[in-house]
Image (cartoon, rainbow, N blue to C red; front, side, top):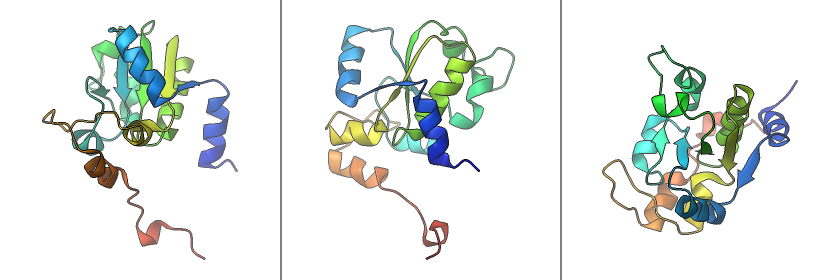
Length: 154
């Protein structure tokens, strides 16, 4: 039986990753770069990289096609556009980028370490009101919220 980390390892054989400092340079070098945040809407509202769009991982495939309620025209029209997929830690984004490559996107990569790494590198994150968050506040929001009943029994 495959586990979550096995799926990540397999996807990493096909998906390129960029570090936060590389993404910072890519944003400056390519104004057409599409930042795709695949976290849940509540996570995106709390904090995200300015200029990114939010398409949750759960609806990604339909968002990439016409004629669905979830259709995101930027994605449908962006199959040849340079796209960096973002999540909290870099795991969901690797899986999402892998699916995007499989369905015909040509220039997709994942942000290694996700917004947590972006924040650790002290790059700016904003909330839904576009207000920049202090690094400490972002740290608090990015802390794992695993509940006791979600932990493996000893």
